[in-house]
Image (cartoon, rainbow, N blue to C red; front, side, top):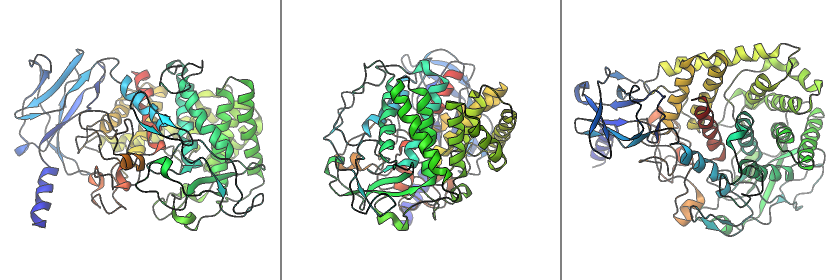
Length: 556
C-alpha cells in the first residue's frame, strides 16, 4: 500500500500541465508559459482562449522539450509575447488547460496591496480589527519584556518597555535582524519611487494622517527597534518567550517574554535603518530621534573591536537564532563587518560626514556583492551609495557598479541554465526570498546598462513566484487561482483563518521539519501547515517581493 501511494504521488508530481504567471502580464512584457511533461514530448499546438467568449485569439507552437536538471521536468516553452490585447485568458493544449490569467496595465495593484498590508496584520501589542479581511484579535504581548540575562546595564528579571513592532513570522517572536532588513528593503523602494506610496493606500488605522501609509507602517517597526537599544547604544538581538505557543492566537500567548543578548551585527543593522529613517521622515523631531539612535549605535560599535552576539546556547528554545548555525552556514555570519558597512553607507548618505565614507573606502575590498538579507546586509549599503551619493571623490561608484554587474552576470548564467529560468540555485531555508533578491540585483543591472536581458530575467523570478513553477502554485496566500493555502502561521492555524498576502519560504532541500520531502532540490516543498521549513511566512520574505514587484512595475 505504501509503495502504491508513493508511486501515485510520483505520477502526480510529473503529470502534464501548463504553468504560467497566475496573476498575469503587462502588454509589453514577454509572455512565456511552460508546458510540462507532455506525453512523448509531443509538440501540441496551444491556443490562447478568451475566457469571456471562449474563442481562440492566438495560437502557439510549443518549443522543443528540454529536461530541467533541477526539477527533472520536461519543459516546453509556450511563447505568446506578441499577443498584447488586454483581457482575461487561459491556454489550452489538447485536453490540458491552464489557470486563467490577465493581460493589462494595472493587474498587480491588488497583489501589491495584499503584500504590503500583511505588516498591519502582523502588528504586536495592539488590537487588530481589519475592515478588509475581517481578521481580528485583542491586544497581545502587553508585558514585553523581561531582561533574560545579566548585562552591563540590567539584571536578569528586570522589566523594560518593548511593546509593539511586528510578529516576525508564523511565530510571535520579534527579531532585530529581520525587522531591520525588512525596513531597509522597503525604504529602498520608497526612496526610488516615493510617488507610488500615498496616504490612504493601505486602509490601516493611521490612514488619513497626511503621511504615506508605508511610512506609517514602517514606523511601527522602527519604534519597536528603538526600545531594543540600550543607553550605551548596543542593541538586543530579539524578544521572545521560552516556548513555541502552538495552537494559540497572539492574545492567548501569556508566557513571559524576554529580551536576549546585545549583539554587534544587530547594532549595525539598527544603525543603518535608523540612519535611513533620519533622512526619509520629514518631521524634524522624529527624524532627529532616529538619527540620534543611529549615531549612538555607531558609537557603540566603535567600542567593540570584535563581533559580539550576546547570550546564545539555544536562547531558552522558544525562538530562532538568526546567527551562524547548523542551518545558516554562510561566511558572512562569522563577522559583523557587513552590518557595519551598511550602517556606514546609510550614515554617510544621511549626514555627509566623511568619516563614514572613509570606512566604506577602507573596507571595500572585504565586501563581496551577495544577495541582500539578514545574513549579509552590506549589499544595500553599496547599492544606496551607488545610486544616491552626490559626490564620489574616492571613485567607489565604478567599483561598486562592477561588483554589481559581475554578480548580475553570474545570476544570468544560472538563469540561462535553468529550465524554469531561476536566478537562485540554492534550495535552502527561505529559497523564495533568495530567488526574489537575485531578481532585484537584475533590475539594478538593467537600470545601469539598459540591457533587456536583465529585465526579462528579473521578470522570470516574478513569474516563478506567481505560479510558473513545478507546483503550478503561487507562493503568496490569496493570490492567483492556486495560491499556497496551508501556510505555517500560528495565528492562522489557531483560528483556522486565511491571511492574504503572505509569502512562504519555498523549496528547502534539507526539509528540517521532516514533513516536506528531503533531497529533491526545487521539489523539496509541501503546502502544509506543519512544514515550517518550506511553508512558513516571514516579514523578510514579503519585503523583497514587494520591492521586486514595485521596481518591475516602474521599470516596465
